[in-house]
Image (cartoon, rainbow, N blue to C red; front, side, top):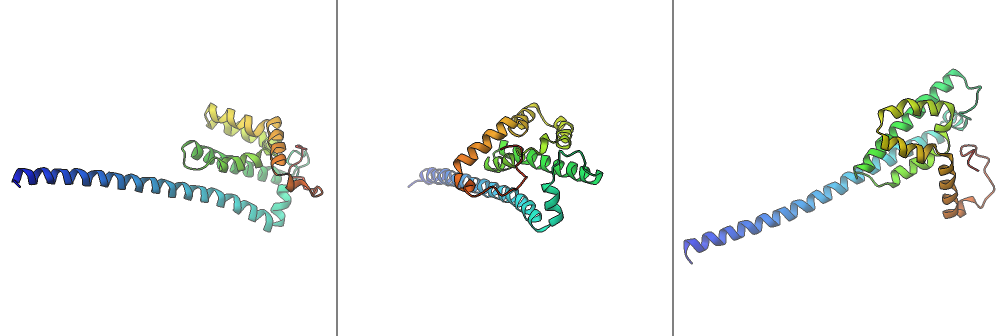
Length: 185
């Protein structure tokens, strides 16, 4: 075996090692992307669980959430709380929508939020004012999507009916008297 043959063999081994390294790096990047998606998804789910838990453990907050936010006899402090709560929900939807568009989280995270928001929060006078103010910071695509999926009462009713059809076992018992989903029945 000549020096030239050894050199050619060395080049072949180096090229093979490069290909193997690229395949390994590709697998690592793919795994890293999956881990990142899972972390984003976990963080988004955790935000919802925190809200649910706080509602369950805090009687005053639960009473606030259960109020009719379209009522005309709301106190100024209640109107302020509704405004800030609505802004928090919007910022959350902005974040989740953007992450779904970027492919960083699954669409189910957005679907959960749309399902909850279609109960009418942003159709109340305060919620609607908050939306009109904050819709100016979003592009037309998002505004159209939000108005079609959250604000449109027909779409909300259709989604709720579809959910009830697909999950009929949840509705077999007597109505709970819960007023959170009012206006969609």
